[in-house]
Image 1 (tube, rainbow, N blue to C red):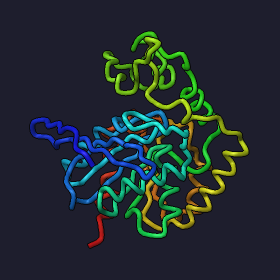
Image 2 (cartoon, rainbow, N blue to C red):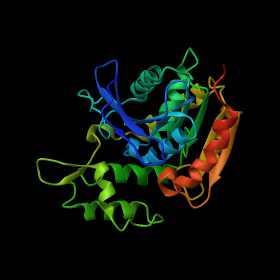
Image 3 (tube, rainbow, N blue to C red):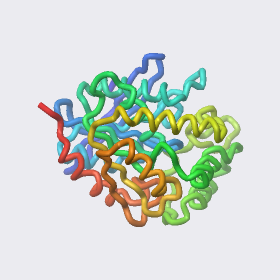
Image 4 (cartoon, rainbow, N blue to C red):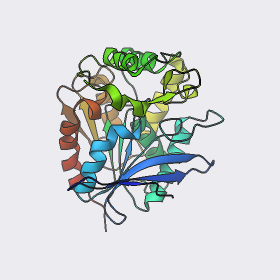
Amino acid sequence: MNSAHIEQSHGRSALRTERVRTDDELTLVATVSGERGQPGVILLHGGGQTRHSWRGTVRTLGELGYHAMAFDARGHGDSDWSPKSDYSYNRLADDLETVSQHMGCVPAMIGASMGGMTAMHAIGRATVSLARAMVLVDIAPRVNPKGLKRVNDFLNGHHDGFANIEEAADAVAAYNPHRPRPKNPQGLMKNLRLREDGRLHWHWDPGFFRARTDEQRERQSARLLEMCQQITIPTLLVHGAESDVVNLNGIDELRTRLPQLEIGTVPGAGHMIAGDRNEAFNVAIMPFLERHPPTV
């Protein structure tokens, strides 16, 4: 681990940057609050997002006495890209285990979309206690195909990049029409990179989002549902009321495999709940975390 910098706001919890080395020699970059010895929480972003989508939640958790870490998945944000385009859920689960070991505790895990899938894979296959509780953010093993296609079309689009940040902001606004377009889109630069062609491109490795057939997705869903039967820890699913990705059928199916599943719905939020309604999302998860502290 290598601390890069610490950011302090008056009267608020400090955020710091840490780096974690994976077993295949990639570096993952994380934003951290709180200290070792406090209840641990790992936050996993969705596909095409970065750790910065959790910035407000990481800070809030630190202020409430947690040791919270949000990290960029491989191929995303400031973390390394895999030279072999090794981005399977098994590999992402390997990385999550490494991050958990880095924290030195049995944390709660909060995963949005891809991050939730990663958490289910890691916990479902683990032979030791990997997490004390799990929060799934608008994800289930089987989702609405139309909503999934809309996400994939966005992630796989814009191969030529953008001439400027306004074009990128227009693309995000078209994908999330229910979210107000920011007056100042400069915050998007955390998700963009200026390449040699002089254009702005999304921060992720294009090799991450390889096309999958319906048959491949079905096999993955069936396998994950089977793995879920090994997950016995407390689990909360936070569902965006306006989501077109997770529907009631997917929730009911997941509940048959996770009978301990609790459901929380955030009104006015779509699939990207933490970005759409960050404060409401924090309110939804805090009582759950408080009810499931670390065992002594």
